[in-house]
Length: 105
Image 1 (cartoon, rainbow, N blue to C red):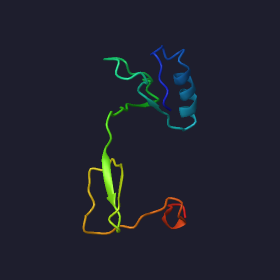
Image 2: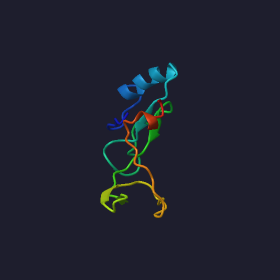
Image 3: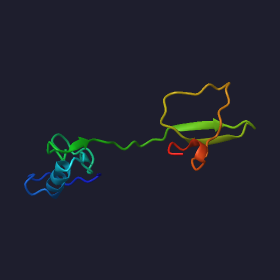
Image 4: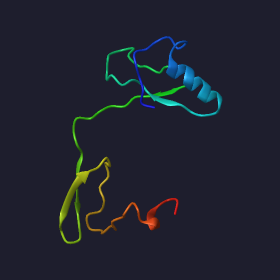
């Protein structure tokens, strides 16, 4: 869950108390390290030992990637991949609602 407030004693922290009961039932709980950005050392919230606490960041830039279709039309989009595909090879377009490509089909 992406919830994080000012750190408080875990005995009165509703996230810590609620997640403790959830973990007792065999469910893993993952929380954000906090939602206030980098507030300096010691600013991480959700630090009780039964919660997996993860940090995230916001990035103030885009990673632009260009897709060139067979008819040479180019479509600009975004990519998070550091790898490039072979420019001399054609790849099929996949429609996410097509049953042939769904994992559960």
